[in-house]
Image (cartoon, rainbow, N blue to C red; front, side, top):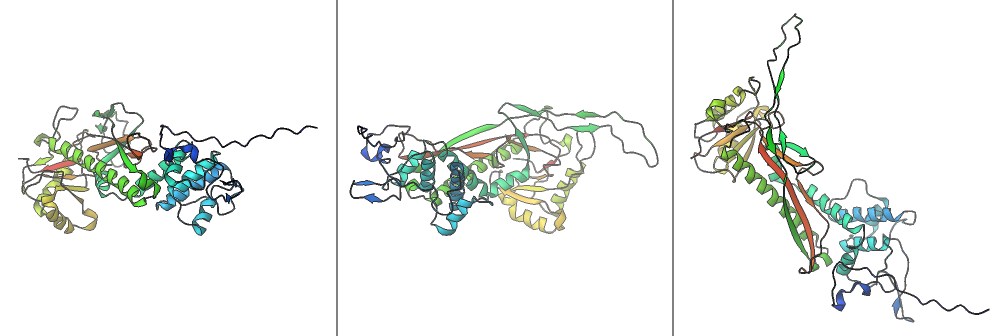
Length: 416
């Protein structure tokens, strides 16, 4: 019986980066030479022992599938950034209770292990993150975390926008026609009579609206990634949200002040439509009362009185204090929300606007993609760029606006 030749040990397959780098410090093959992070050093061989272990090392992880470990990694990373889901995976719960905070590099390690790769014990965090970019799970884990951060941020500018606009969702980027439909010729029933059917006809307006996108890439440095700089990540996402919604408010105000024509060829504000007053004064008892009266007396497309309640008082910053004082004198259930913005033209005689509830009388239409969050901002997977020593976080702001109707808004004062 002859001895079979010994099969030489082979290194695990190295992960290939999406770019080439001749610097020895960046070669990913150096990460995967015989051990995983946490393995013990063997002085006889001068190498690290390969010691299989669950991706999340605490808790009873042996009963779970690789997909469970990936989901736990996402929950742990979200917990680290303060946006943990309500129902955390059991592996994640065990890790939170007994372990230190879970970093971006830890999530990278989990995804690498679940992909069948082994790590050197001395692999630095940035190398782990870069290597994990080539796995099928890590980009999604990170993207879900950015999404959670974005949705958790309180954004006063977005709250103002939502109070002013009627929300529309579409399933593609093509221009579409949005119609405000009203009925004409519908009489109220008489008491004690059985009336015959009355033919009524919808009256569409057909305003065009379309989603447009703004793209940006937020640079995340190597140092920030290696140090798991949570504050910087959150600040970068918050800054993009703030800038995006400031742009939206500027767009809304410019549309209102432009007084452009609607689909019927007539301007948004005109005496013929009873939605404008030449009283150039800050909101007070008299001027606010006049505006509320105009809002109620407006005629709908069906030639009925709108009888709309005042919901939002939109003013330039010069009128903010006076508007707040005036509204405070009204009964609580009759107070419109005061929204002041520097994006409206200021000045002592600057116009201001009173609007109805946008869900009852939509004036300003805001359109976003069907599955997009209310913020209309989404963050993508990390991107590698040869010219940048780190990673880019792609951000997209996809939204569109148009005037849908003139019923539900009045302007007080004439622009100079």
